[in-house]
Amino acid sequence: MKNYLTACCVLVVVYFNSASAALKGDDCEVCLKTVKKFKDEYETKLASKNPSIDDVENLFRKFCKGLKGKEERFCYYLGGVETSATGILNKISGPVKNHLPADLICERLKKADSQICELKYEKTVDFLTVNLNKLKVKELKKILDAWGEYNACKGCAEKSDFVKKIEELLPKYEPEAAKARKEKSEL
Image (cartoon, rainbow, N blue to C red):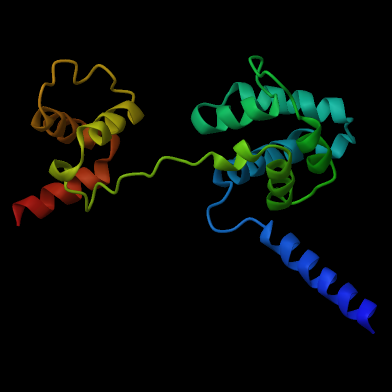
């Protein structure tokens, strides 16, 4: 009877430990999005041809060439970029070939390299509601960088200069938000 209780306790502990490994909330958001995009590309280009693992890995390398930012960093961690120090492409190529869901693939990748799930997207600014004057200069610079306007505010010395430049460029990059802000200010 004592052995039976011990075995039950062990099973309960194992069950809850495996359940805690599941992805929660926005865990692995970059991994999930990138794996889903890659799986879509795999389905359209290779799935019907019964490809080898090498074919899937080569497709992943090609897929990674067009990525920027956090997705490129994800590829770097897996070894899909030429500058990668190490490679664990087999951890993604086999599961994708076997049609495993993206969340399960990311769970396995997290076990192989925890850095993969530490990648997070930058939070986007809601230009409809944000007060630009309350943002920090660093955040204002990030907005300009995200728009590709690195040099747009080269001579900006004060926060108000950055705010003016963003408001000036807002119709180009966020037309709906610019229109709504203009209507709101006219009231």
